Image 1 (spheres, rainbow, N blue to C red):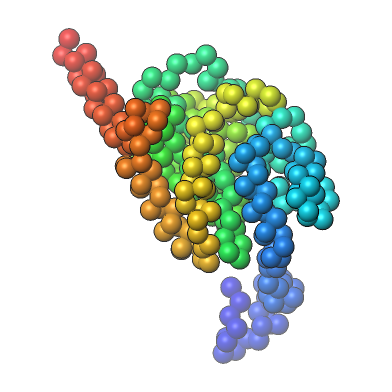
Image 2: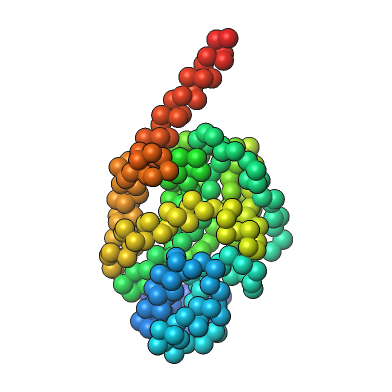
Length: 286
């Protein structure tokens, strides 16, 4: 709102009219140091192999690798990266205050068709001089990525944008499963799901997470990072978006998937949607 070259008002006068300190106008956000960015890359790589590493274990690991770090520093970096170890801990992905936590609905559930269950998660994307966050929504049965967005903050907005796209393109699922992060307990996220008639499921905490919760999308992150992210050193957000977009197209439409008999997720999704529609038509005729 402040114009540097305003013909009549100086920057001081504009700041006074807006009731903001002039220092706020001149302040520029300081990014992470090169050393911290390098540590975050190491943490990210290690976390893919040992997602049960909390702050203490990650600190010990980095010290054993010759890095002089303390727990305070690693805690801040892991919180900044949005990493949430899969055991009881001081939670780095806290739900938004005052928002409801929904029960876990997938225990004992047989997921047998597309759009029965979707899952969503956020991951950290390292870049040459910074980092971004990526959210993806996946169909649980076919492993197809339905929508994704990249953001430089962990606000809920980019998650809701991905959700809106997924629902617009594929229709709402029966169940949406997520963790208890503030993005997924926010009013914007849960209200969009409720208005679409979607049942909300949220992961629990503790050792149970190791085997039951969002395992498919966690595998997606590992595959994405080793096949795409770690092979590049993106300088800008546009480069990161282009790289992720290219890989997601490859993953959905061309990459063979072992759990799907070697077929790509989009192929299986389309075939099973067609079968479901034909079954519904037959039932209507009957």
